[in-house]
Image (cartoon, rainbow, N blue to C red; front, side, top):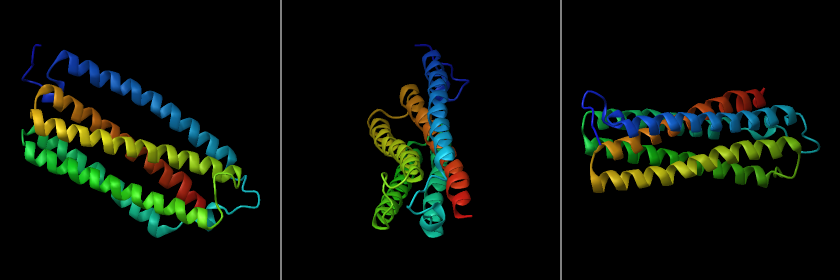
Length: 198
């Protein structure tokens, strides 16, 4: 395995560069998935039947808390990758742990929000609007949950094996995934929650 020291560690081998390219292709498929979920939501958003609307359900405090958790985690994962590129394993691991704690906070608020919806009579079976809403938010939440497990395994690998081209590549690909989830959340925040509150 030939290592090119002129490149960042995560790009330093041909295999690493191909893995990053392959992951960008995977993200293209994820974009198609979420585009389909958004399109379904936009078609069904007015199909509230006798159930509550977004205006009745969406609450600013929980929305802001979720957004702060997730956008801050995007910042900390970036700091983690920067620390990795500077060769600081300890700082990189610290930022990754903070990222996962913030992601866990996001999930906790989302679960609380879902429980509140159900208490208000808003379930996935109540209306087409709620069915599409729960599917969209649930799919995003499932991706965040997967990210928490994935990030934990990367932290354990870096602790055990150190910062080598293979672990750096895995950490970088994970950061791309995490940033993608943040971008999806910005769309959910803007076109689902904010629009639904109006």
